[in-house]
Length: 401
Image 1 (cartoon, rainbow, N blue to C red):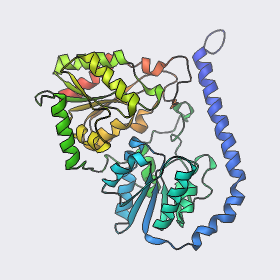
Image 2 (cartoon, rainbow, N blue to C red):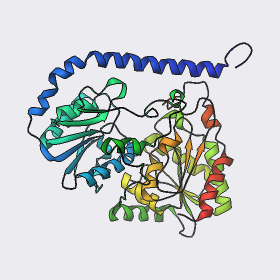
Image 3 (cartoon, rainbow, N blue to C red):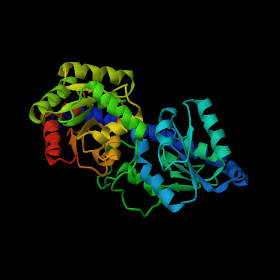
Image 4 (tube, rainbow, N blue to C red):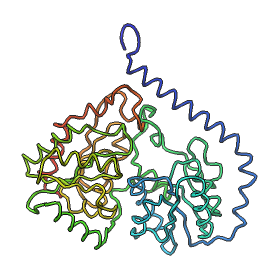
């Protein structure tokens, strides 16, 4: 605040907040108006033949990290219904990962778009689950559970979207909204605990992710890649993950280079640079080239998701943006340094492993916007190479890897 009024940053934050609140208000009004129609057709699913020993988990819009975060909830379902078969509706790219997951019996890939949604609904209906859990905040997830014929449909009632749910749970204050909208007295809740509470409202927050064995084939693939890339086993293996699907979450290439050079000089570290998709593979290759020969290998585009899990299990440390690699590392039991700007470190920290959250302390942090709503990414600029190097050094010195 200045003598002339709010600062430019404060005005931009206020505009961002108003846009988000107006969008949610319009959405809530539309869905509340549709509830009489929804109520008229809800009984249709009750007349369908369903199996008491089958459970449907709707995760069809989740990405890799989000999917791993739901695994404590799936483990709780297994504990409550040990004889039940559990089916998961997921993105096609995640199907190989979930087929290897011991918590999942049936995988139903759902391609994006209306046709993919219809095919997923048809497969879910054929599965014949009695219960369905919506592990996504998407407006269409309750429809998929309803079309599947599940008599019991459980989910959070985000923005009045839960008309087709039979058990509508009030979402936590710190879920699925930008941090700029958090109530002052709202305690942080980890995303894994949020989904777990749909299954067991009284369950304590999970301390770790359930075990997940990547498999012998993935371990052989990783061993072969490490040999090709030139890793010397006497050197600490550190994973760098500089890519992210959301541009606002990206850190700066010179900063990554500085951190890598410092860790190589202090700890003789060797780096595996990971990423997903062509853009992230290009960024990984550029970082490896900047570090010079013999210092790093590019795993981006080379390994599968199971391979990434097996690679993380061999690493001493993972340094990653607030993205899937944080949760892959935690699932593998590897210490993590996470860089958090637009994301919420309390909600998306790794579970069950030593970690350091490096947070860009700015007034606009935790906006969760895929693209920054300001003229500069202040929150990521606030994270310095020295902060990341110090966090990484503290974990490497512990010898936890």
